[in-house]
Length: 395
Ligand code: PMP
View 1 (cartoon, rainbow, N blue to C red):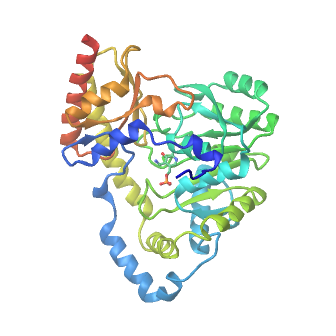
View 2: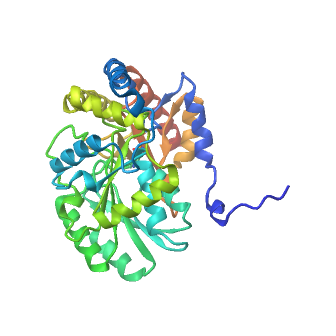
View 3: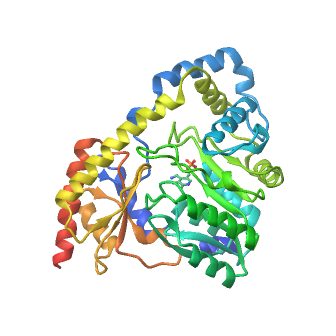
């Protein structure tokens, strides 16, 4: 058989890590690998009531096709929530998507031709890298520090790469690093995007999960020319299984997203949208988010205290003020892919950090999730990881 696949499929490959991480579904594995929310705080009881209410009151509509743009009352509520991060928009600037992952795929479809380049933080979100790769693009990685992308380096990259077509960033509690951009860097980013005339994709699933300190305004709130596309989601504040995210953009750009949404899947799930909308009507999402934050804050603190006790001092990690991940940097000669194999033998998993650098390298890094495992498993898993790291150091 010699079936001919499209050229774009050449860039889409199964990764060795994904294969290894398949093992983490075994219940005995303590997994710090996924980006999963804690299931204990899913509002299951509330959703039972809400689903019944939607079916009883609007059952026929909930099971029918609905507008591509999304359920109008839900778009309205999202537009209102956006104003909290300084984004003043109406429901007309919101498109409901099947998670923000769909917004990433659409961004690639809308802005990238083959051989165009995407400017990304180094490291960046693996799911976005994979989504963009399907459009046969190249990646320009810009170095980062604890305040976000380095702006001098970004300007250099913009000057030297005429094939750059969009800038993709995760400014709040970044996946994978847990870092948050400073206000100054956000302003400068918009200034540079204006100067070099590129769209910015601001991907923000974690901004509402700030455990301490003040929330920094969204990059979109500084958008003077309508070039910032904000991607939001209810996956981390409510439930990833419902698959509800959104794109917030200027009329002109949003219209492109609406057109590709029609071609991709016509609309997001009518029932989920109505259920979420009813939840937002009846219950207090902010109260729910407080519960999530309290749980994650405790797990993060516990993890950091355990790391302090059991990780060798030459291992460094970030101290995120929110979100789901910390980023661990090992001494240069330790390869985290090899370390994962050793850790898995002892039933502990994490994601080796090299995967988050689209152009390779940085194999001495790892991403560790603190939201999903219960407290006692966090302690046990970090202790084991500490031992595995110490063994690798002594090899
Ligand atoms: N962007 C980032 C940075 C993420 O971490 C994730 C989820 N892991 C997504 C987008 C996709 O989330 P969803 O499609 O569930 O909204």
